Amino acid sequence: MTPPILEMRGISKAFPGVRALDDVSFRLLPGEVHALMGENGAGKSTLIKVLTGVYTADAGDVLLAGNPVVIGGPHQAQEAGISTVYQEVNLCPNLSVAENIFIGRGKVRWKQARARAAELLTRFDLDIDPALPLGAYSIAIQQLVAIVRAVDISAKVLVLDEPTSSLDRDEVARLFAVMRRLREDGVAILFVSHFLEQVFDISDRVTVLRNGRLVGEYETGALTRATLIGHMTGRVLEALEELHAPGEHAPDSAQPVLRAEGIGRKGGIAPFDLTIHSGEVVGFAGLLGSGRTEAARLLFGADGSDSGQLSIDGKPVTLKSPGAAIEHGVAFCPENRKTEGLVEDLTVGENIMLALQAARGWVRQVTDSDDLVRRWITALRITPSDPDAIAGNLSGGNQQKVLLARWLITQPKLLILDEPTRGIDVGAKAEIQKLVVSLADEGKAVLFISAELEEVLRISHKVEVLRDRQMIAELANEGLTPERILATIAGGGTGTVAAEGAAQ
Image (tube, rainbow, N blue to C red; front, side):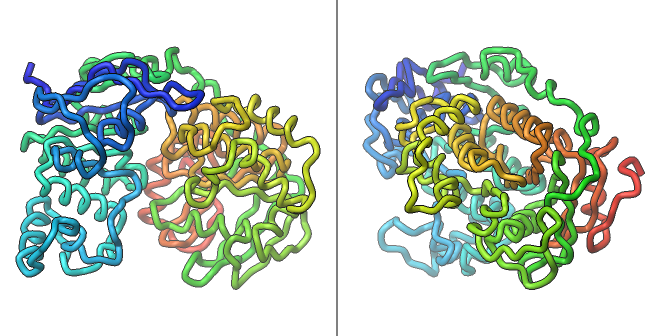
């Protein structure tokens, strides 16, 4: 076997109350795509932060090309040839593409820099203007620009941390084409993703972590989806298959919990109609930018509508703010849990109580808060189970559970979930999907938004299809397939259309 370009031996790292890594070893070969897999809390992010000098390991060694190195920070890692592109692009959208590629390298001759940027972009088949602001381009293009920047700094090791979480299928294919070209050039790529299909599509080898320990290193071609999940979770994962089909427990046609008639917002979402009944899970399906989140924000009062009428329990309401929505029994878990949901510096318990305190008034103390917090920590299996743990130290999946607990504690009539399983592991994803189904069985109305069509179909009674910020069709989930939804997106009309049969 080719000697590894990167080797981490016996890495351990602990935080107060948490042993994040325990004697973990990892190897990365030149010219390979190596997937790092594990459930949330397995230690993936901690291992990457040790590699890039964000954290200092308590024990263990890092070797580059066989030579021991001590990496004191991200800048030193970059100088050593280790570049990282994160899920959230950390470039400057107000600067030009060329400036983003070369900024931070001392004195730059910008005429030559723009020419060099154009050359690099052409190499990766990126037909964009290096003189335009980076923010003028999509997130997918911005991520590719970040990769171009990393490669031009002579990266020997490229770390891609959840690079596909915000991309559609065409954008993923474009990213993978770039990754394959870099692999052919000898660049070693460490790829972190929660999308199993993508791991099988692009990676050569897989390393699995579980509970901060190394499970094993495997050739991707020798694994099946089931065995990989088993390595990640420590069990044969049957949770997803345990979900009943949505149609088996379809809601009755009694008074709807929510009815929207012609509500919309100029520049946000065209006027649409929507009805959600008690015990019903309604899925929103559409490509990125289709208007899914914009529609959800109108229903929660986060954005004001400039047309139409909204009714809750048959009574017309005007939701001028999220506070008004909470008072009417509407809860909303936003897509970006980092910037719009979690308060990372507060404890788990404090985060869980925020919505209930808002509903009852900030001044009044919720007397039974400790019991309520512990009840929901137990019910959702939040780890660690300490209500005094700092929320920002939890894994992504457990942070998502904290947000769910925050809203479930208010006993809402309608729960709006915008990408609740984005960026979390397959085990936590299964738990959240099962929770949504159980909530519907208990009579709650749920609006479920996900970019994964299979996930929407798994738990929804009906699917609202959006395209170009318009709701173009409503499809009953009876024999409905992802291909039918995509065909509707590609060829559907405008406005809300009731499906005459999903199997057409």
